[in-house]
Length: 102
Length: 231
Image 1: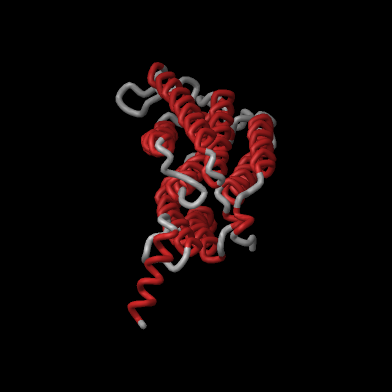
Image 2: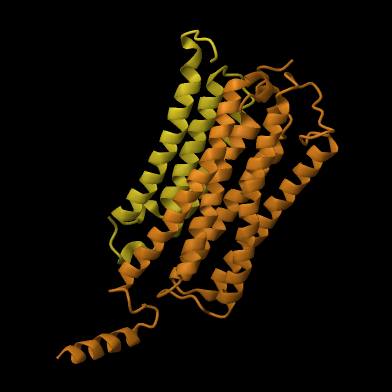
C-alpha cells in the first residue's frame, strides 16, 4: 500500500493510461467491423472491462486506496455480478428442458 | 488535566483549519470522504446495473431485432465521442493532480477543459438524438426502422438506447452543473494541497460516468456491427 506521502500519482501514469484508453477505443471500434461470429460480443466486452479497470485503478486511484475503499468497490462489483449472472443463467438455460411455458 | 487536553487538542486543530474536529487526523478525514463517495457510486452501479440487465435480457430474447437495430447507430460518431469523454477524464485526473499540489491556475484550466469536453460530448449526443428523431427511430406512434428485422421488437432496442444513454447524459448534465460551481470556487482559491475533497470526489463521479459510457459504447454501437443478422 502506498504511504500517505506518495499519494500524489506521477503525471506519466495518467498519460500512459490515457494513451492506452484511446488505443483500446479505436481497436475495439475497428475489431467490431470484422466478423468474428459469436466472439464479437466477448471481444467488445473484454476490451470494455480492461478500459473500465484502467479508469478505476488509476484515474479513480483505487490502486492506491485503503483496503476499506477497495472492499467497498469489490462489494459493489460482487452484487452487480450476482444481479447479472443469476438472472441471465435463468434466461440462458430455461429452454434446455423443453418445459411448456418457458 | 482533562481541560488541558481539550485545550491542547483545540490548539492543535486550529493549526490545521482543513481538519474537522470530529476526525482524528487528515488521513482519517480523507478516507471517510472517499469511502462515502464510493458507497454512493456503488448505489449508482446497482442503478445502472438494472438497466444493463434489461438490455442483456431483451438481447437474449430478441437477438435478430437487436442485431439489425444496432446497425442504425453511427460507429464513428460513437468512437469519436468516446475519445472526447476519455480526454475529459484525463483533464479531470490532471485537475485532481494540480489541486493536490496547490496549483490554482492549472486546476482552473483543467476543470474548464473538462467542462468544455463534457459540453462537446453532450453536443454530439444531441446531434445523434436529432438524427434518430428525423429518421423516425424514436419509439412511439411514428416509429419506423428501415431494413430492420423483427419489427415488433426493434423499438425495444431504441427504448433501451434512449433510456440508457439518456440516463448517462443526465449524469453528464449534473456533472456540468457541479463543475461550474467547482470552477467558481477554485478561482476563489478554496482548494489547496491540504483540502480539496470536493475536487477529488467530483473526479470519482466524473470517471464513474466515463466508465458507464465505456460499457454503453460497445453495447449500442459495436456488437453485431460486422453484418451478422442483417436482412
